[in-house]
Length: 433
Image 1 (cartoon, rainbow, N blue to C red):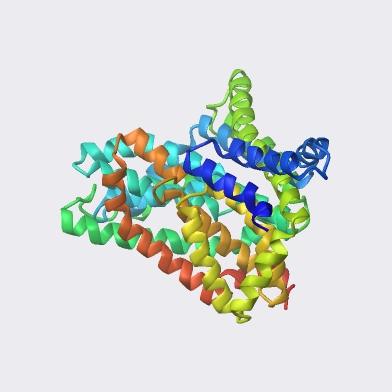
Image 2 (image 1 turned 90 degrees about the vertical axis):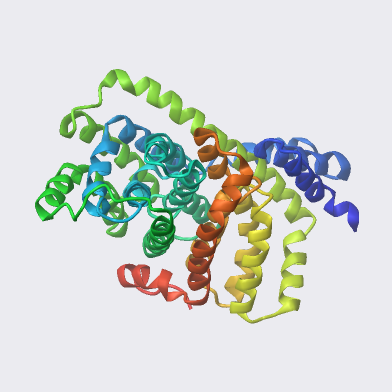
């Protein structure tokens, strides 16, 4: 019945009206409870509150806090010096450094939005001073931030693991190779565009192994954090949630005693920043929990599953169709909310068709994060464009070649599951199929 779809249609209308994501989802869920009449309204409150009662989701505030501490502890300029030593001699050096820095930071910030803001503030103005187009600078800073969604720890992978009941450890390790492929694709496009436009290197030649070694040693404490997380989870020293708490302790010690740039007086402000960043994510999760109850009550996931399976039972074709659907949805729906809403719809279908949920998780998170740089509602697009004061029309023209490259990587990840799975299978052993 059409009435069963009213909350879903209302949510799309609210998204189109640029209503804040969490409120759009919550209002749509509320409309179900008000219109249905059979389900008590207090169930909505119970569903929203019960969503917060989750041990795995504790990993989100811990990793956000760890990232905020590391930013305060002065790691950015050390990693920037390392990126300069690595690619400062390449055509379009500042843009290349942006991608390398994002790759090095991916395991530290856990957030693509945080990366986009940092990269736009640190490297964006420097690129404009070096005669790079402001729109190009905004595009490369936002696209580079996508890498943070794949290289561990990633908030998107934590949420997917929680919703789909999939090993976060396997997801973390499975995201490494795709993250590096995204970085490589961005660097290739950057080189081609920079060659045509005359964006120059910062150095006449490679910095040399001595300087590379020196900058690497100075950045070693920062670079050790993703290794610390992966090794600890892999060998059962701590769970992904406990890894977040241990990482907070680790980065406090690094900031205070290794880099000597963090003071106890800095922690209250960092804690406040973390609480604000975490609350926005958790409010979205709470609203999506109530909306998920509506989906389950009206049996919309099984209806969508039956419709998709009626189109094809070939898992590869189904994955490609889902990718197309996600790309279209991603132009109108913010990535985290789409991840929360769509995961319980698609995972049961694909598991029945023998698609590894770790493989699908990486494809899903990659797809929805690419949507974060896609007009009209891409979150990283908004952040970088606002910092660089770039109109959406200019941004849209500049982002097209980068989108093409990243969608090519997405296609490879979809068609060849072993790109994602070989490393988790090597470290954990095969666990599916």
